[in-house]
Length: 306
Image (cartoon, rainbow, N blue to C red; front, top):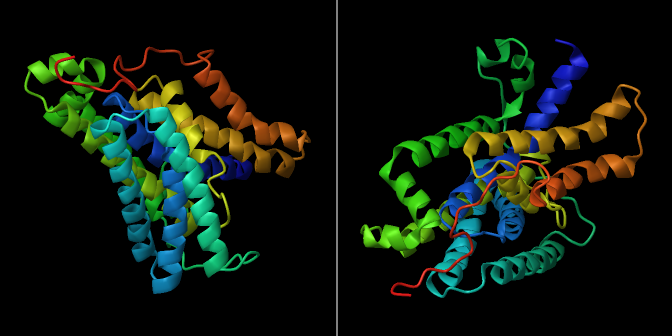
């Protein structure tokens, strides 16, 4: 394989992985009828506590556990507000995102200092024997983080869960027709609550990937809109697993072009390259590309008897 192409594919996979992890969880939440707009805040919170845990303990694995726990706590609050208290899901999500940005910035400056970029213990890179020997895509898996392989496994697991399990059927039912699901004996609120928790765990893994498995440090607002891109990927993917994965890889490829095009001598305006992933996301959200109908009850609270 051409070396530049191998580097491009590897960069695409690495840059897309936080989107893949977050979007996989968001897909479960939205299929259950809950728009988890606070995904950006969950990822940022997870990135900070993942970095803090890895720095304090010297163990990137414990750092990832701290990240997942922090995001899980946020998702519990999100689920209580959105599902049980039936608060406006858009307002709750925006509020969490603003709070996460302010809180992580404050804590970062208190603990690490305003201009510090403290390097933390990072997750080891791993080349699985046999995988790196695959034709065409094999070189892209050389020296990838363990979380890359785990993230791809999670995508397969979520696809199987939604397609082939009773829990997956319940998730799809409460997202499409919660009243019919309730009449069939499915606990709508509990299923939605659990779906949001799954999104929180996946957002925790996505945030920890940024700080612990990728750049091995934390910076203010390091998610830089990745949570919103993950939500756009779910819309772009038409609320299906494999199309969502493809959308994440497309966004990752658009980001990788920022580094790859100058390396091969193609000069393009930097601002255009920086804008490309967000332009694709805008087209997806606007319905210009990848237009499909969302779950019927998405963002709609369920009140039994009404």
